[in-house]
Length: 381
Ligand SMILES: Cc1cc2nc3c(=O)[nH]c(=O)nc-3n(C[C@H](O)[C@H](O)[C@H](O)COP(=O)(O)OP(=O)(O)OC[C@H]3O[C@@H](n4cnc5c(N)ncnc54)[C@H](O)[C@@H]3O)c2cc1C
Image 1: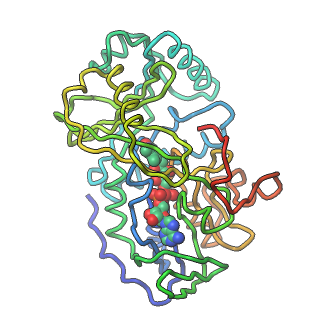
Image 2 (image 1 turned 135 degrees about the horizontal axis):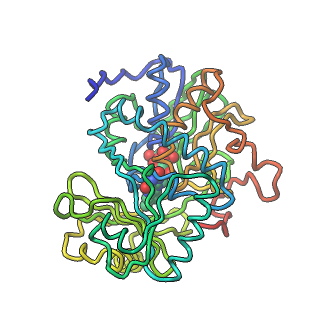
Image 3 (image 1 turned 30 degrees about the horizontal axis):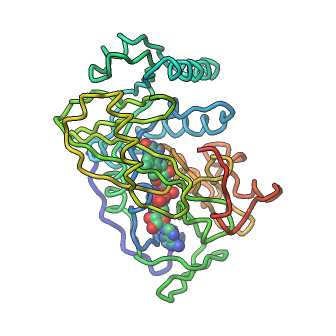
């Protein structure tokens, strides 16, 4: 395990101010800090946004969708960046586990849906194994006997996002204030302070649309945490159950994270009876053996989503570096986003082509670049 460096003091004249202390802002700050920049993160409650809710699947393959090859490429690059990122924080400390992931179909219609995804995996040349029912159950004995088949992906991994954030917070200086105004290289905080630096990075997750005029909206996800014997569930399992998606991710301490709903409800983080019911109904259909273990937490978080489901990573016309809109894959893409942000700030070539993720890509489109995230709707979940 790497030695934890002393948390740097809050710099009096920072080179870089990062607005937002979720996994994206903190990872970017940590990367900049490692490259010698004096950086500070502003956030009234760091680590309490979507990053606190997330399951921590690092799953480029199971997150591949038709028509999103550019997102798949980013996610694959992120997956390759994860081992070094985990190592820099302590792989055990963040519970980074490279045990692959199983996607299982509950009934015949769900199997047809999975077969269709399998075609995409083949077309993209992704390493997956298509499994029959019995093969699924020999990989994960907890699966219901009726499961129709599945897909195993050896490249999809997992980490514990809460532990990642905790490790990052030990390494990055933070000021507990909210930014109320960001212009160029100047940030006004809610305590009246005006901070000036060479470069502002905005990573305010679902709230970025409220702060600046990018079309980012919150997509609510309800999620549960169960607790049982260590090793009860061997593998992270994603299921399609009568057309809806559910997953169960086992941690090394016996926790099993069950998620997640996808809801267009604005800035609402209520946990509802209906949301919890749907998750338990589907996960227990798929993994009946989980019914006896403890339900220890219900939670809801807000994923930051752009109209085209792709993140926003790049320098805007306003000179601000944006790192937001990571939607369902912000834990996976944190290290590659951090490397890209650091390169942009330092004037280097980013490690990935950012053209498809530019903050300016919405400008020319009708309805693009609105300041009211509530007005954006109808985007597929
Ligand atoms: C239920 C659920 C399950 C998920 N599962 C996964 C998964 O398995 N794998 C995966 O890769 N991703 C997953 N995600 C997505 C992932 O959680 C997000 O993409 C990621 O956490 C986004 O990180 P972020 O730092 O951009 O946002 P956040 O974590 O939301 O952080 C934004 C921060 O900005 C701060 N902030 C807001 N406004 C201001 C302001 N004006 N001034 C200062 N600070 C401000 C907030 O306090 C907050 O701390 C999941 C999300 C949810 C909700």
